[in-house]
Length: 208
Image (cartoon, rainbow, N blue to C red; front, side):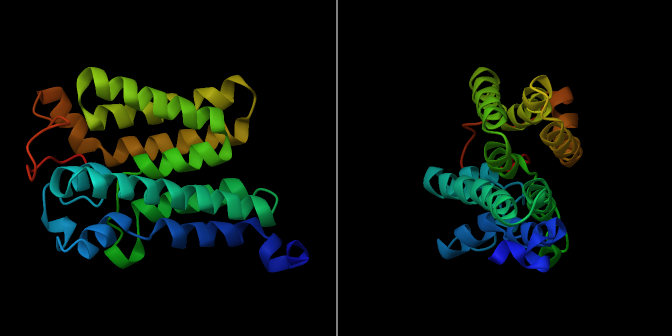
């Protein structure tokens, strides 16, 4: 029925829908509703999960993680439901929307949680690889930024090894953008000045 509608059957429609979903700044919304004010003026200034954790606590951070991952997964599901190729383009749109939301002057998050949600929806084994790598690296090093970078970098291997090249290319493109958004974190990791998970609440740690 609805899938016979040309507008809905066009996969680029779901890129646009994905962008609108991805551009919802849940970290900013959640902290404001909690009475904390503007998360962009706290800690690292980032709207992502890690900065919410350091400035707002575990509960708000967990909610931000679920919402940021969920919007990516929802974009993939909607695209898959209505259009051939809509899952890939929907996920791509959501990721770009999260990184570059128009209503925040294109200053969004760094994409780690949203990439997790997209990976789980597009190719679940890749999402499991992402989660496992993040948890392992975070547990060993206590660097959230390094965990995100390693997870994003290794995730494309899962679909590539099984011949799912559309997913592999999508995740590879996302990994490049995640790395680019973490340029300052990479510099601090090299200098040994990057903040670790478990640092004091409210510290100006820049990897959220």
